[in-house]
Image (tube, rainbow, N blue to C red; front, side, top):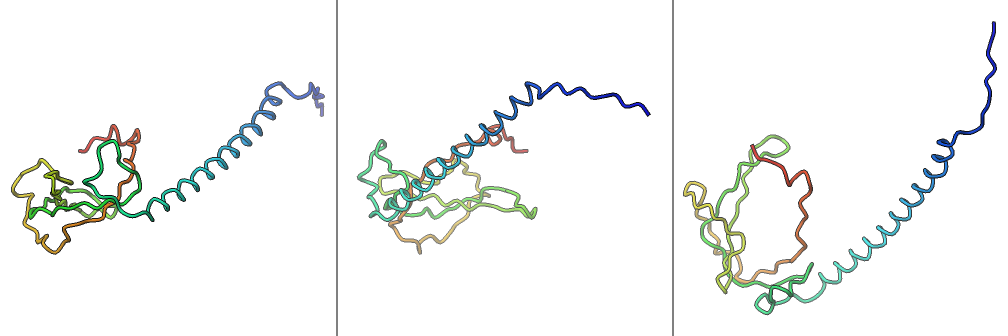
Amino acid sequence: MYRPKLISRGTSFTAKLLGITCPLICAGLGVWQMQRLEWKLSYIEDVKEQMKMEPLDFTQLNEKQWPIWRYINIKGKFEEESILVGPRYSEDTSVVFYVVTPYVLENGGVIGGLDDKTPEKWFKADNSKYPETLKVIVRPHEKVNLFEKFKVDA
């Protein structure tokens, strides 16, 4: 049986290029991950320190002075009416409604208010048991990712 002789021409340029660039890319990604870990650990420590501080008074803050990851004392009361927001579907395919109860601040501002005044969605709730002063936390707003930005509810 005849077998042709394979002629070795050496390593090709593409193989050499891949042999050099792949380890360099992997090393660069490893360094980036270590820097990211260091940043994240210091961020967590900063958040823990902010959480240990005394709560700020809401009335003493202005719009440009909002701290992030700090407790703030707000004074007001919950409205008597709450609204069911939904339906939303959970992972086990059951129907879920969120209960939203607006909180009216002393200065007249509203947290959690909705414009929907459809009577069948609103219901009376006994909100007298909740304190007039709440300790809330300010956190950064979550960025909307590309998939949520264009999501359409059917």
